[in-house]
Length: 140
Image (cartoon, rainbow, N blue to C red):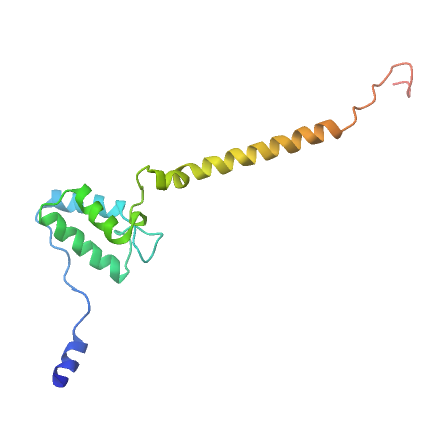
């Protein structure tokens, strides 16, 4: 067993072969699906764009699931069960994601209320400009 360890150490950890698609339709479907999924390591890249090892492994797994007959929803469901909804670029609207979808609007609305309050407060504190009377003044 100890003699086999050097041979195992020389084997690559991932499969270096390129992905093998059955036809152009399968390839197009794969690329569309990979663009909708987030790399769990890179976080700011799609599964299609990432060069991380886990992204390469996930692309292989996605293709394998496609070739086993799973539809896109089933593949997404599998990945969500494994990695959480973070793996989806567009998570569905659910009670757990309301803040994610509505948070930016809430912040924008709160900022608008604060600005409106500041403008109103300053408007009350500013004394009205004295009216210029033609009889008084410089003769202009």
